Image: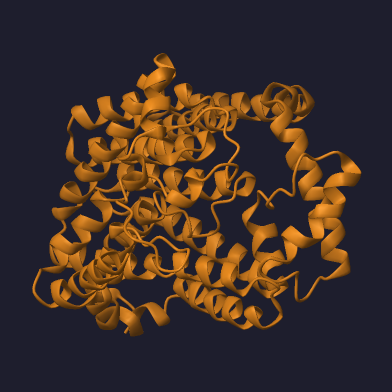
Length: 429
């Protein structure tokens, strides 16, 4: 164990201290986003497993130092920094400080990756392709494994029980009884998380295909979409249909004449009405998981009126919901399965409001960027990818920017949009 600790210290020094001053920002950022799928988990620090991808992201600190003042003046990142501050303060009334520290640590890489993307793409716009190609390669591996494990469950059992699994999957998730998953989804384990990851990468693939007029990223995007089906995530399939349809309408809109636009708007309105009228049928199709979520969110509403300002503190939700779970027939004390409820429960009303402002700020900024010449199709697809990320996390436990596999891709996309939509000459001083 002593040798493991010495090796871990050496890896930290290498990735966080030595490499940042000897390797270019472009290659360090490339390493981070290319490792997003695989992570490569190392030795634990107490019960926290820092992955190689995590340590490489912290190694982007020179770029954060360089662009820190600029990010402090941008409204989107102002919400992020304020949220971090609120969460640190909420540790004071949290029953489980260790949980809070872990979740706060997982939020930190977002701003490092964002700053590095601004630096790298601001200098060389063509590096968008290098970054995206590596992400898509990792996503294709994940999709291939999801499909293979679905068709051959014995391969999945072998992989999960093998000695290489802890390299790609957080060892905390491999402990007996820690995670009740009926169908594992390769490196991402949870089917909903895997579906969200593949969906976001699929839209990224189409963004690259449109921007650089390449056909093969579109084929990868289609392959990733097929992978979503094999995850078994009904929410993922629903978002796939809705966001793909939305994307097709947005991309085709400028080329339509006036009467075709009226007809399209009428079809969308009818579809929306039918969707609202058949919400119960959709809920039944989604299955038991939706009913469970409704019970969880009901507890969130009840708890909010009891503790609206400070929330429950980190770890407080798990303590409070235990008795409620017995009363309503839940099998266990589930996590909130909603980012905004989760932020409120951890750090109170201020955290929930800042989370909402962050989401609205990112999506509105991305939406406005579609008017940028030569980048319109890319921005439409990127905006839909970000929309998928923020919508899907409202029924899952990703946190705002905590999910290790998806967050680096999201931070990279936001950074690209920022650079393209706000050229150097017009950026905030």
